Length: 500
Image 1 (tube, helix red, strand yellow):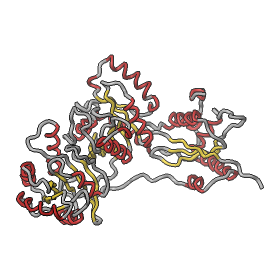
Image 2 (cartoon, helix red, strand yellow; image 1 turned 90 degrees about the vertical axis):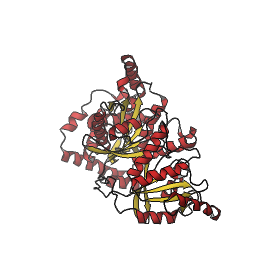
Image 3 (tube, helix red, strand yellow; image 1 turned 135 degrees about the vertical axis):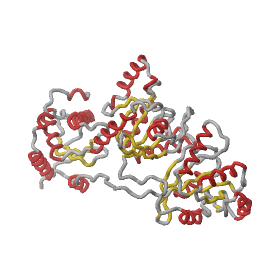
Image 4 (tube, one colour; image 1 turned 180 degrees about the horizontal axis):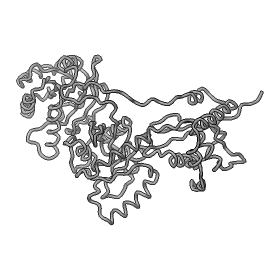
């Protein structure tokens, strides 16, 4: 039996529109009282007693001080970031140039929070992608309250290090010289020549083993101000948006265009972004926190090296987000990788917006094929808002705002218990569940266990067919919208109490 077998004349919406709230609540209380005749466990009772969840109404907070970590390629900047954070957050690999954008993390030491910025390797007279990476490092210094300049103590000071020093002196920011890769007393002697850089005493550390990092952080806390002089305050609840898509579909271009500045490195080379990059962005008077993520090339278990960790970071960024914007390159056919990214969003339970990029490059013939692909490959997310735009030119970028707002409204939606049970009663009366094995499962009571995403629990007398559950989901969308959000419908099959 298909989902369509449940379709037919339906007056549920019309009945519920004229239903008095008080009457709906009385009906729900009657149904709930009937559950006393069934075996319920403690978790069932907690679900039934759960009140409506409070939304995050956090007010504005102080701007955290910003600490930037800079240095030439492959001196161990990302390893030091991970050591300071106490977790493997930044992608680390022996290959120089793994970090390309300036990447922001929240750190804490001795009860004080601060923003930690990892940067790509700085090189003088760089060209192409390397020049963009160096520019990002310089921007990070401009937007920092203090700087850690990392050098390789074993290699010693190089001409590139000396040019970095000149750039740092011009910034006027407090700088601490970090001599990395001092794994033991033997390497301590290497730090002597670093005095010649003119930045004062080198701080010997081993990012790999943690040696000397605590002393360095004590000094950092002495240098950093209590509140940043350069960072934006943490605004009260900007909604968090993850930008997802295959490599080179335009995620970084979209972030830069929305920010109005070159916030992340953009290159025709696929895979330029490897770490999630956060940025507060204002579009049409509303502030959002956008997260640009690494393009997902293949299944995580097939990825290797930096791509493997970047894939994990992308998934972690999605978990921190509230809504995901999945970008598609309209000049190419919708691929299995595109669909897999959409399914990743569904599995995470986040709100979803579909953005079709490079729309300005679309011709009539490709448009016909694209519409057919959307109808066939994205039918399971037909409820997601769709935006056609050009990240390169900024065309229709403002249309993202109503799409994001609609998706988040659906994600936050909560239906009162009385009205939900009135919906279920009308629905099952008009379209009862088919008889299976001589028995007909009934829905005894329903409650919305949570939002973000909307999650419903149905107490039933038997197992509901997957088709019937999808039918319930579809009718919920017909009546309440739930634009841009997955809907979860769970079952709790309960048996009638035995009479003693």
